[in-house]
Length: 139
Image 1 (spheres, rainbow, N blue to C red):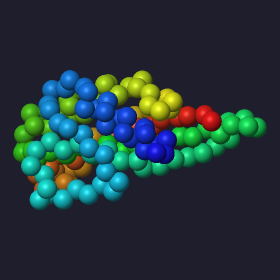
Image 2: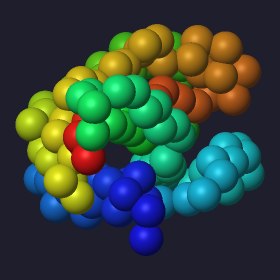
Image 3: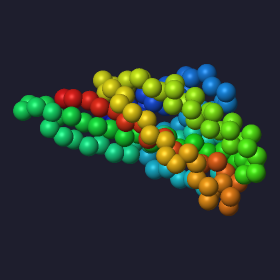
C-alpha cells in the first residue's frame, strides 16, 4: 500500500482508539461524499488528500502528506450546547492526534479552519467541519 494510504489507515485506527466524550467509528474513504440523507448520527470520515515532495538533500526528498478528517452530526443550529459539544469533541480529537506518527511519517501540524460551516448548519441543521492533519517523511 502507498505511504499516504498507510498513514490514513493509521489515523483511522488512532481515532477509533481514543476515549472521547462522544462515541463514533471513523472510516476511511477514497472519495468523501456528504449526503444529508445518509446522516443518522455522528459521522467521522478520513481520506488521503495530498502529497507534496521537495528536496531535502542531494539524495533524499521530503514528503509532506495531508490527511483530511470530516466530522459531521445533526444538531440544532440554535443550541449553543450542541455546538459547544461538537467543538469540544473536535478539540479532543486534535489533542489525541497530536504527536502521533504513522508509517514512519512524523506528525507536523493539524489545521482546523473554519471551526464549522455556518451555511450547512443553517440550511441542513448539520454540524460540519474538517481537520487537515499533516505528516512528514524524509526518504
